[in-house]
Image 1 (cartoon, helix red, strand yellow):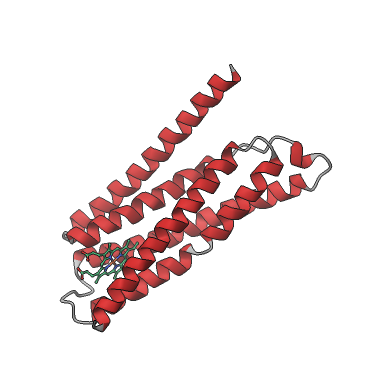
Image 2: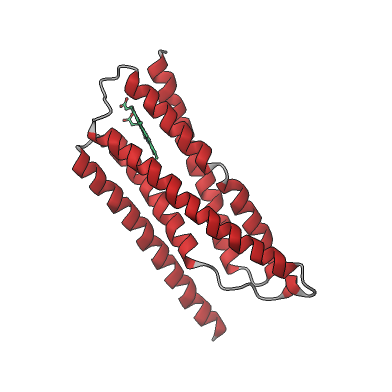
Length: 190
Ligand code: HEM
């Protein structure tokens, strides 16, 4: 196996890791947002925060292994459309991920502060920040669209269009989910 294929294996294994971390974060976010009390919400918040810390490492590994393949003579160059789209996606994933992390950390600190007050753990948690879920599903949609772009290798315009479509699908999925949660909450409340 040559260097190119070692890098491709690292690239694909990193993607498997990304899927696993993403599943943990989405599950924890979903459970945390449905928690009935602050005491119930805090551990889910902690799990999602700890798992999300791996995202920047994952993006750097994808970028590094991808860059190695570009320079290792696989026939690609820095001006290849789908490669440029991959770079744009990594920058977006890091930027949006950083913003989500900042908002989630702020919400986590507020939860911990409320939990430390007398009777705080048994109180109802503050309303979940919907932007966190929406952006985090947008990032998942974006990452999945990069898989399509890397596999089909279209020209730049089509590659960028695929990224936009992936993000839009992620946002639409998140909005549908939160509407479903609101409707089931109303039904449960009678
Ligand atoms: C979120 C980021 C990324 C994801 C999800 C991703 C995903 C993938 C996938 C699934 C493949 C396998 C495609 C195939 O073998 O047909 C692949 C291959 C590849 N990726 Fe990425 N990638 C990402 C970022 C990048 C970046 C930033 C670069 C370049 C700087 C890059 C360069 C490459 C190259 C050169 C290949 C090899 C293509 C081949 O040999 O057919 N990737 N990537």
